[in-house]
Amino acid sequence: MTPVDFLKSCVTKWSAPIFDIKGVEGLNHTTALRPADYLRFANADLKQDLEHFQINALSNAKRAIDCQVDNLFSAFGLRRKRTFPEKLVVVEELGLLAPRILKKVVKVRNLLEHEYYRPEVAEVEDAVDLASLFVEATARPFRSFMTAYFIADGTSVQRTDSDKRVKEITENNYRIDGYTFTESVFVEFDAETHTFQLDLVSKNKAVAEILINQKSSLYKQLTRYTIEHDIDHDQWDEHGSAVAFIRLLEKYKNDLQLKPSSLLIPHKPQ
Image (cartoon, rainbow, N blue to C red; front, side, top):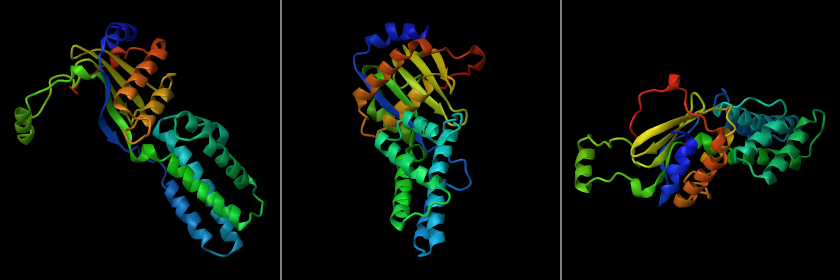
């Protein structure tokens, strides 16, 4: 079954689309020193009432910003951009940075680029504070990123007798044959290969599997969706998030490619 067929013949019949999280983990930093280290250095420099320490504070604020951006690119396997403004555009595309913060970061970054500029103490403090704000605003994937979730027809959930389930869990023998939802899309992110796999499920079987990598036009959009619809994010809503996902697939339905048969592996029930 093609993805377009699945959307037309299966998803359109769902009576209660819902979003259900199955796995969350923090993505890894790849640099030896982390942005928080450079912020710590910058704040320590600020405590020293000497001009060269203020210059050091500016340099460490710049490193904190650059380090965070580079780690984001590595975490999602994205190709590095040549200039800092180009990198920030990508960060914004991922849904991690509001435009108003973007402008401020560019402004302070320009200040940091003036190698021979003598900044005022207040400017240094503002630069360090803004670097801290930037790092915090873009840190969510390193703390919590949804690596597995369902978009499903809520009426298709597999239910079992509650007493039986408690007994099975107690005996460490609990399992569901197939998928939690028999009519669904199961999404899984592989942090090592930087790919999303989508299992299109109908009647409790994967009728198609889609692999989305960085070359796909859907990759950044799906990454953004996964970030913005995290349960701790203000855009998360059990029904609304499911509808948003379906609309995303509809928009990019012509870009959905079936996973090559050479890459298929025995399916693990979810």
